[in-house]
Image 1 (cartoon, rainbow, N blue to C red):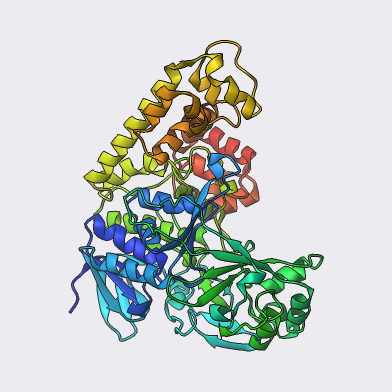
Image 2: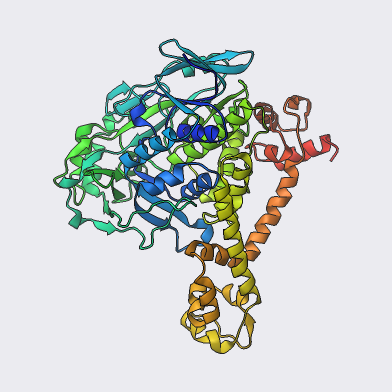
Length: 620
């Protein structure tokens, strides 16, 4: 009935979809197995993609030939570039999306991808022989063979949903949990844990009074996630902002004695940076209100997502409290919020390719690794799918370094530091963030994607044209001289010192509050040059010129650190022999088995003195 596949992907959430697409586009035969074909790529929580650091990840996925950016653009109902008031390393694109359109577009793209087959059924276990995965076993007892397997089970592994004192099995509202895989992996020697996440109530938008809320429009100029010419909306839907108050908090507190979080019924840790509303009013009791973002679920639906009101309190408490929120006085609820507990596997059990250390050719991606967020899951799926293909075809693995991409930072953090709470990406986690901007993801990654077969020739031609355009702008600005009378009026306007003599344009551009669009007002030659190029290209060129010194310093630091990556370590080395190492370092190094001194240095609990001991031992 079934052929042997190169890659089987278990789970069709954001991680599973990207894994299947990547492996198939590289030439593997792929089977995507899901419990429900109608929920492929479902946005289980908020109807949005991107945001701080997450937007950079979506652009990196797109630059690598993934689908998330394209789907996000097509299903976009609002676009905003966050952190525009800060430096360009912090700029982060974010979209509100049509939930149903997002899932439908993902399924359509997968169905149009050659080499992807589908099967709807629960996977009950893995077929393992001689320390390597050989396929999967379904709940009906069907064995399907594969050369490599990617597990992307999301919140479904022994998922347990909590609403007040009620609890029932499920991987998502209205969907059953998955059983069998956790138990088998534990028998094989894997360490497992429990994590928790939550979601807010869904509301009937027709019952809200938007005049009592603050409107939040999208950016006037809509931009893309994808480097392709994706179709963008001509109009946008707005969101709204409102706030909780003391009455809301008082009502929520009446349910604390029935809260699964406070009663201890929930054992798993929830996301630190996206706490439930009851957790917020408990931990920050001095705050009189908390902000709520009112987000529409799509173009043609009245359903509303109440961002900031994630909760697992009893449904009647949720209802009463929400009706005290300004604009919610006559609110009607579609369904209450809930918390969900699920199994995960500490990611220190994985290598840099996301392959497990205990079972060859078995890869984990997404929430099974302890992460939270669509974007974090999707980029892991991309990496796992690429490396599952490489394992099946006996090719060299792909590893992104910390100075290559936010994706590299995420994977490196997970496998070296692990996580005991849902891991979320922030710009602060990346030490090379001026190198890892949202505007240059294609410059960093598309060449690599083309080399491994994920980016086509058309993408490379687009990339070459962009590089040539940036060079043309940079060459002009570096060689063009301006006289004081040309620009001093503008300098006064922005509060910058007047020029006293002729100066190269790149020196003027380096000043605070001075940009190319401003200079073009006074310089016809510059204005004529820029008219030939897109806003995106001009912006990239300006950033490269304006922050040239900072970029060079970061590259210098990155290159120094890369020298430690070149010092290889034996993965089977017995660290217990080196008594000069601290006890913690010996334990952590033995557990994680780093492949290089650079990786060893990033393991939590391994100190600089421990690295010095290793250097001495290696004769360095």
